[in-house]
Length: 230
Image 1 (cartoon, rainbow, N blue to C red):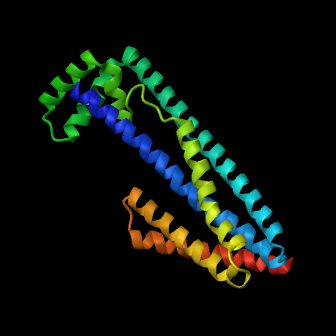
Image 2 (image 1 turned 135 degrees about the vertical axis):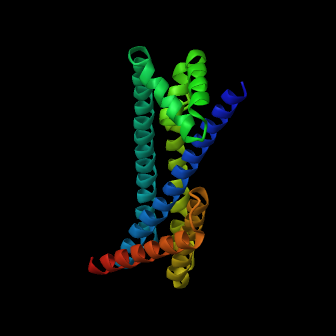
């Protein structure tokens, strides 16, 4: 019972992390795509309404694009997990000894003696065979699959939220301060997404923030240059 509860908690944690990951990536994409359009258009025209509509259109397009991408990605992962479970179910019927050996090897690699590992594997395959093999061989929790809608909505809202920062900064700030305020808004927001991505992925915070800042600055330079060519 305790093992089942632990597996359910692990599965729930995995889904939460996946949703958060989708949110962070969506937010970062929202920031960069929207600021790219804003910079290109703002260089070409001083009409604030035109700039706003262009930025808003790109924000919506980016948000729905990210959401559909996440939905497709997680749906594919879920389908693959279901196929894997079916394959293991067939293997248990056709090659039980091979599945038993895989479970035994798993516990031996954890430092359990061969004899004890044999007993554990035999006991588990007698009590909950499919649940055991999908966990041992693939790290899956039986009947717990990622929800593509959660990832899609997380990506949708975070991309829209990320894009709002540069959109509001450029279209609602005083004309004379429009450019520095927008640049500052972009730098702060991409630094924040870099920080969050590092925390979620157990990475180095300084490296993630620096990387995001560099990408953000390059994005602004490229689109500002493209705007000058119009």
